[in-house]
Image 1: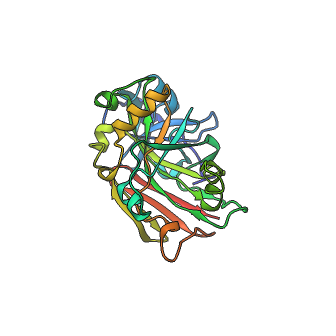
Image 2: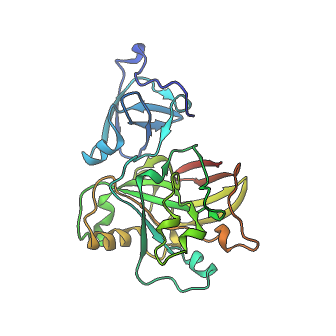
Image 3: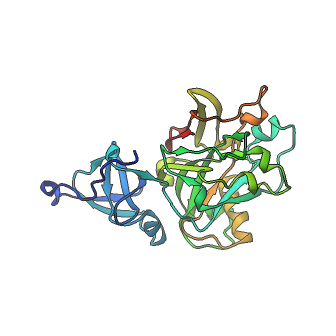
Length: 293
């Protein structure tokens, strides 16, 4: 939680005990006086890597990481979004069959996408202020993935080779401003509109890209539940399409869309209000909690 004391060095008594860690891991980012640092998360304890997670991704360093000591309890640090300043934060729209069906439209043949910005990112457990200019802010649970290598024109069959890992994202959306213009971004970019985390989970730890489960709870009530098996455009297909249009770089964050159950399509409609608690949950990726203010 914010304001907690951060221990960045392992205890001296354990300094001689080294861990050689290989793939199949969860990485978190946490705050230190010297800036963000990455740690391996195991059994509720953090093992400091001494570098930022973006630096590890850029160096291709997630395959093998050395850490020392017994680690520290995750509760003792202030977690940050796994990648704090991605070069690109791309969001895919209308990409769950169930979400298209609840709107009464056909799934798009070509992926629809828009952007958020780094200032929209919010940490796991953060309190996000609702924008005073909107009264129609909605939730959207999403599985996101991080690009691990600079790439262009990647075939879908090779796409998983450039995915560093997965995380959770809540695409908070001011619907009244989203639909003021044909471009959705005015309702998508307010500060805190992209809570993200808690961890970056490597692909072999997360399992098949078409079997990642996700649900969203609002004040304890389940509002969304699905899995990436319902994606219109799969994660490899998204990599292929986006890398055709642009060069993708290490640390780029791509949110894959939201399943059925958003508040704006319910009867009666559900809009977020101060005091609401939103949890995005996945048995593979963890729990991302956000409180609205």
